[in-house]
Image 1 (tube, rainbow, N blue to C red):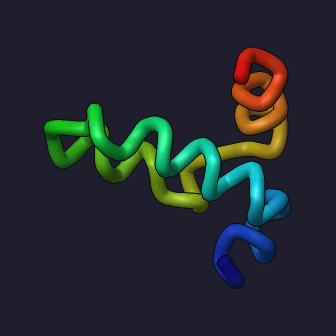
Image 2 (spheres, rainbow, N blue to C red):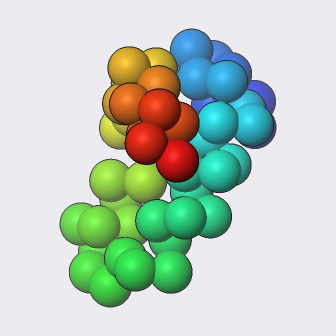
Length: 51
């Protein structure tokens, strides 16, 4: 959570995103794409708007 905060992400939004996407990630690249360092606040906002 601290890494998410340090990257400018809202922790609750990040967790919702992570728990939604993680079960479908199968490759190493897909798992790495879920790290908070690889996401932007805009990406999470778009996800929350669709959820």
